[in-house]
Picture 1 (tube, helix red, strand yellow):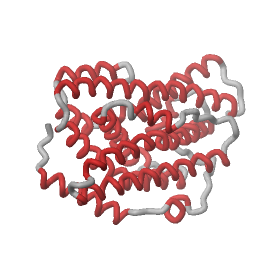
Picture 2 (cartoon, one colour):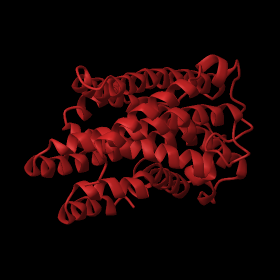
Picture 3 (spheres, helix red, strand yellow):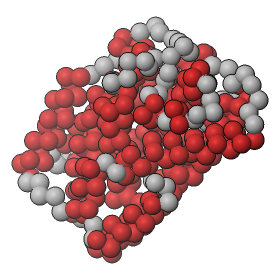
Length: 310
């Protein structure tokens, strides 16, 4: 287990509260600022969308595919933040009569996740106003959250830290340095990243705290539940990649060949698996925290489950 003293833990809760106060932002005043999307620009950077690998598409078609992926990217975050917020509210109960700084940190976390959900609903509407009709994101956030929250807190916090860390990775390595992205889309994830940076710290603290109360038998079961949650995410990605491929082929302005359609579908699934599963599972800090909590045999079970997705 990672060695974190009680003082270090309390200090980290306090630092997230201070950061939350310092970086507080507004959807209208700081992010959207009366702007709309310009379809002459990409939404997702090539490092995430992998559109340069779709060699059968023209440069304008690759740009369009990045916009579809960007719309799905925003919707996916709106989806996962529903169950994250519910879990944060649930575990905050354990701090009600304890350290009030830790409680404030989680309350702020929850408040920010609610704001992020509203932001992504607004972004979906703006994207819908700019793009052709026919796009579909058919997953109900409440249904997904109910299914996820049926698993143990250990497993849900493992998935949550995975998500929070790949958010940081995506922004710093791909979104921030790309000068050719839509400024509005780029700002959405700049401000999202600012608050998610603190959330990742809290996820880790709460996961370690949860693990300290978990028996070896319960932890072993939780590892299987984490694998099941990753599989459920992949199920969503398989369905959405087909939907996005359909939408692209119906609205790109030309008829794709059967081979091109098949390559589009398989390429989108690879891109989405990279974005939402592989990049998080391979994050060095996620691996460090995870392997500090589980046995070598449990690590091998997770690696085996992920190998087919990589």
